Image 1 (tube, rainbow over the protein chains, first blue to last red):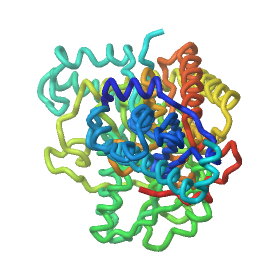
Image 2: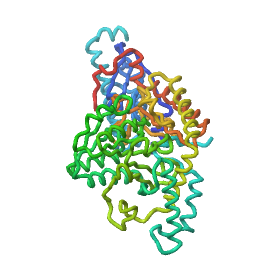
Image 3: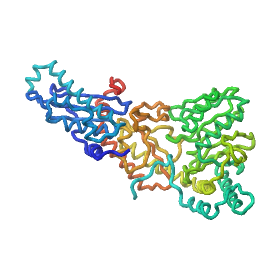
Length: 137
Length: 404
């Protein structure tokens, strides 16, 4: 299968690879997929509690080149967005940006799911520990 | 060293230039129909065909009259299974095979099942070999045929054909073997192995594509096969169709070269294979070899790289032609049924690579491939959340994954 130049670029030079402290109240972690399906994405956001802006995003992905590219792109897009803006990222945006073929659309869906899971995790933490997050901020 | 490197010699092989030379005259000079009995054009073509029959027979311990030419091993397997099932239908309707056969055997068996033949698919042990006691236990009074491949196309394990042949003989059952991957790579002898019918193809042993043969035993016992294609009654009535004379000349030449060079070549290939294996095992953790290392073709290596997905691995080594155990070309991933039969988890089946080292691979190429694979696996593991979790001591089998 031929990969688009953008998929190849993200595969060869993945952006924002790594992990954030998942115990931090300002970090939201999303882990989606399953090893036996051939795709697992872990996506993390670090949010500035004052402004609600995502100041850092990291990912690690087990999956094909398109899955790696989708999650790498997602971390690029997340930085600088507010958590609510982040939820507006749609898998179709990723498909268009990376020119994913139909058989790889599930990779973009997984990336969207990972974003949502990470943001939800962050939001859950804010409800659970509102005070702590204020103090920490 | 030229890139890309071809290391997928279980899929097909480069035509040996010496084989090409042997084929050349039969395109434009000796172009007669081998079945034309009344002029020299036909006689010369027939001579080439008979020479090839002898070259093939010599390699596998058969006699020339026992060789039936076909278009390749898929046809040979179809002809063997369907032809025997039809011919021996009054004696019985049961065939025994194994789950790791090539699709040309498995799908032929499925077709036969629809026509009322009963098929037992033997499982394999974790090392990829069949259990001989299970084989013995599966034989019934209705069993007419055991079809077990000589060597597996994915994991390269070599089945105990001699023992299988003995068990079959005791019970009066015929043995067919798809020996495509084994012939020319390890010594194959239909006499000592007790194989009655055997499939082979030219393009796996540095010959041309589109030509193969079926060995059909003529004595002790004399095996009969019902033709599956109607026509001119070529090949002693077993396979009609004008013979592919250039291809047949090529198959014969390939067999002759294999017979002469196999002892040296298999030593060289197993040296290179072991070098590649050792390099990968010494430099990477959590790497698993699929299939028996003892009962194995000299040029095969099938390895799973845990926590790395197969397609991304192949993408990273795109200047090396190899095969992955998983074909992630559709939304539904299908891990290799051969690896699954060994009991490998889906995750490991997804992340396997088959290396098939061949006659034209060099020492330098093997070094390059080893280093490249190590680099890419390391890079992908840095990217892999699974590798990270495993290193943190998380038991991945206990995680509640969100399957999609």
